Structures are given as C-alpha cells and as structure tokens.
Image 1 (cartoon, rainbow, N blue to C red):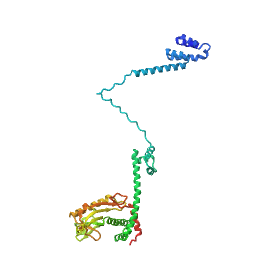
Image 2 (cartoon, one colour):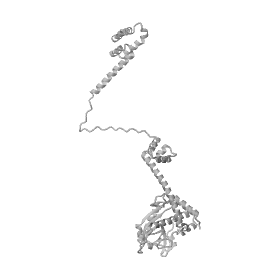
Image 3 (cartoon, rainbow, N blue to C red):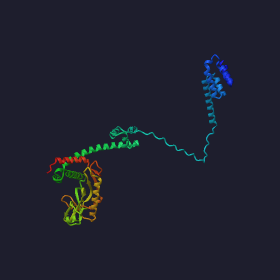
Image 4 (cartoon, rainbow, N blue to C red):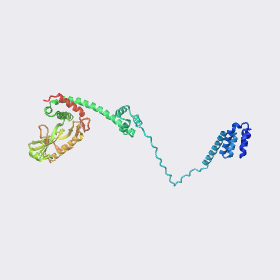
Length: 406
C-alpha cells in the first residue's frame, strides 16, 4: 500500500494530486495522525519546485521527509564534487616563463609582528645562560628593583649583551676582592718598612709632627713624606748602582733683583701685592720655586762626568689625586729642564742643603729618561703604590695617633 502511494506521488501533479497523494499515501484509516506528514511532504515538493529529483528522493524515502532531504543533499554534494573535479582536470597548467623573460617580482610580505616579551620572561632567558656565581651576582644587582627596572639596567634588548654585563660585574667583584687582599698585605709590609727605616725619627718626619699646622694638613704631609721615603728605599734596592733622590725642588731664576721688586711687577688681578711663597734668594739672584720632583733616579758615570737622569716619578697618595694631574706635572718639569738645558733660563735643583744639583746633572738627559706616575692601587696610574688610598689614609692616621708630637 505504501509502495503504491509513493509511486503515485511521483506521477500525480496539480490540484487532484493533492487529494490523491494524501489518500493513496496514508490511507483513510491513518488520516487523523498523518496530516502533518502530508503537509511536510507537500511543503518539501514546493520548496524544490516539484522537481523530478525531489519527487524521486521523496519516493525513495517512502514519504520520510528527513530521509528525502538527506538523500537530496547527498546527491547535490556529490554533483558539486564532480563539477569541482572536472574544473581541476580541465584547467590548463601555468605557462612556463620564456628564457628571455625576467622572473616575476616577489611580493613584499611584511614580517609577522613578534609577540611582546614580558620583562619577567626576558629576565628568565638571561638567567638561563649564567653560571651559579653569575646568578648570585645577578641577584645582588637586581635586589629591590622591579622586573622592568632590572631589564632596563641590563640594556633591555639583547640577552647575550645582558649576560656580558653580569660577567663583567663578576670580574670586577673578583678584582675588588683581590685588590683588598693585596692592599692589606702591602699595609703590613709598609708598617714593617717604616719600623726598619725608623722613619718616625727621621728629621723631616719629626718636623712635620712638631709643626703647628692643622691635623688634616699634617696628615697629608706625613703621608707624602713616609711614602717618598719608602719608595726611595725600594728604588735603591732595585737600582743598587744608581743614586736615588726624593723631593728635589726646581727653581727658576727671575729677572727681578729683590722680592719687593718682584711683587710690584706681579700684582694680583685686583692690583694688590702678592705674597711671596716660593721666592728664594741665592748667590746669583732671585729664584721662584716651580715644582718638586718626587723621585729622581740618577746614573753617575765613574769618569766624573755629569750624572744622567734615568727615571723620574710623580707620586700621588690622596683619594682625590689623578694620573692626569701627575702627568701634567711631569710634563711641566720636563719643559723647565729642557729650557734650562738649552740655556734659555737658569734652573736650580735643590735637595736639602744641596742647592747646586743642577750643575751636577746633565739636564738634557731628561729628554730620554723614563717618566712615570705612581698612585694608589685602586686608581689608574702608570705604577702602583700597592695600597689603596683609604688603607694608606688609615695607616697614616694610626702613625699620627701613636707618635709623639715633639
């Protein structure tokens, strides 16, 4: 019965088909509960324009609307795939470029925008390439800083550059530890040398201790004098065949005959008369002190000829002293000795009571002498005192406290 009704649904069209399709398909006995299915079938056919494929699908599904829809959809999908395949088969391959034809220009494709890396992630990448010692240093360096501040401190860009900064800091910390160790050893050595040389009873040291100068000035004078005496002793040990002098003052002859005349000719910018520090009368006239050579190493020929200058040092002992300042003094002294050697001015070299050293020394030999600056171990100089400025200051303070002032 159902088969016969489906066959009728494929052939009957028009107003009469409506009644016959309902009667043949569902029967009178089932009409009361199949009205909805009939209406769905009618709507299905109308949706598809009563096309033959729709009637075939409905017939094949024996009136089951959902099944008919699925059958029809499957059929149409298969047809679409077949058409797509046909298009691919019939599409001609791209023509090969001619040998004389330049290649087509490549389209500029902008690089993808990298995802922003958080400071925390960047710092984690930095730490991955560090040794345990470097990680400890990084912890010290970043203490109290936010991740953003940590990244900025390390450059904020290249990870390897950041690691190099950390490694440099580790190296500096190691050097600082080694420097403290060397300075402490040098402090002990200086104490021993001061005792061996009996420097606290040296006449020039005693004069400093007895002076009425302020304590700070006395400390600076004592620091310079003690180090000069120690360095002189060490230079004598290193150059047993040479003569070592410390504290050699340089004087230049002035045109004026008297101190009063000199003061009148060298007034201050405000017109007042200057004081006369550094002016000194010698047998042949008036001289002005132009500097002091801290350490001079001389070679005296056995023939009795004039001594030659082998080396000169400018020594600095303070926390604020610099190589630049010491080097400028060396150059000024060289210039003065040079004009003295050429006879352009009269120069006197004075050490203690000996005010005729210039007559004993070949001043021109200074041009080939070694010149060096020497200063605290924690500062940049040509040569080192072997002790930091702070340790030297502490040592001299102890000497002042433990030495009588008379």
